[in-house]
Length: 151
Image 1: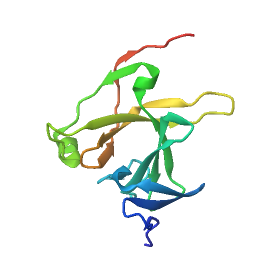
Image 2: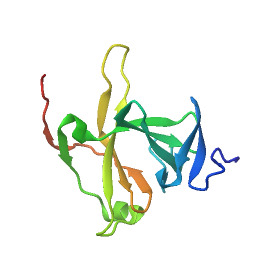
Image 3: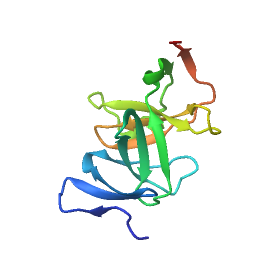
Image 4: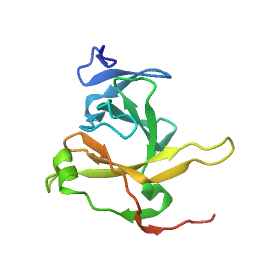
């Protein structure tokens, strides 16, 4: 399989092919998903970058399939705080140690035109940003609170 990510002149960046063109991405934004992502079990290497116009939206772009790009956001942007427990196997896969930084993002699912995107709270993306490892955890029933602010 040909690699889609190629090194550029600057050794701190790689060029990532997306369906919208080629983007330079810092190497510290490259992630490995040891089990892939549900629905994309064969894809393990991704880049994480944010929307230039809206830093609340990130994109998880496959390095091996330019067509696979998931929009992500922090649930905190929407005042959503929910809890889940990682299994021992998930902790091992993410190689989590006490000093590691762990982030939780959720996938934005597009809806029909004119409707706002929906947050997938049943499949958070967990990232060990210290070790650049990730996984998507499938939840049957997320627990926690949802606060919606009207302006």
